[in-house]
Length: 368
Image 1: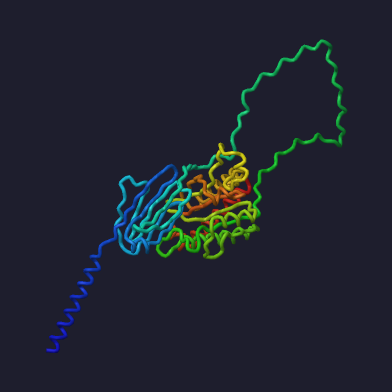
Image 2: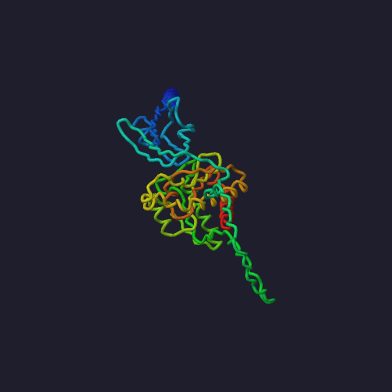
């Protein structure tokens, strides 16, 4: 009897376990609604779901895209005319962005939702970059005015004394060699602290940005450059703090390092100044600091991009966007966005190749 009793208990436990497994496997995925609205250069993306799903979701943003990790499986409902590409991988939602100047993230309740306010700017891909500075036309040429007929016999020009044997005719002045001297470089590892950036598995963008920036800083220091990093640890640094720090160092070059969701490299430059802006505004506005350096920024980006393309056999796209971290710099400035976070997070040789190619590009820029 005891054996029969034990068998009944075991059977009951197995049935309960199977029912629990069935209930768990049949758990309904959370429904997440994706909406958008657009007005001029502003786009608002909204993710709406229940309090638990939104409250425990973690969102990461970059110029290239948005990643949202949900606490459980989910189903996404998006409008058929949605502006951007989306992808789902497990509990993560990816939204690939383009032509983004800035992103502001906020959370709202009743109903629970995550809101992304995106400021867009027209992208201007260029490969290669155009030569800096405008090409000035000499304009229409006038024929020389007719000379009056002399009424008196022409006077004989006085003869110059012949040169002495020891004297030599002066040589025409030689054009000065074009050279960009770089003594100080500020390297900006993107994100940090609570700003993770893109996350791929165990790889976090903020960590890889810092590793690449430190390696680049060491390589530059070995070449005799003074190098300053906007952050040397995993800490949160505001945009204004990064800009103020960089300008205070008086750099000859500013390089910001980020990861992206594009298949290749993207090098961002500040947008050219608004020709219609008031001259007084240009004089005092923070966003016009880069105007005087835009030509040299293009030359530096072109040189670095070419070396990356050749060394890594990768596509390199150049874009001009009004990013404050570039527009506000009193120095040639560029932002390098590398692809495949997981690759550069785990493969030290790939990081070394990227750093070496950036170094070669900077050396080429110095000799231009």
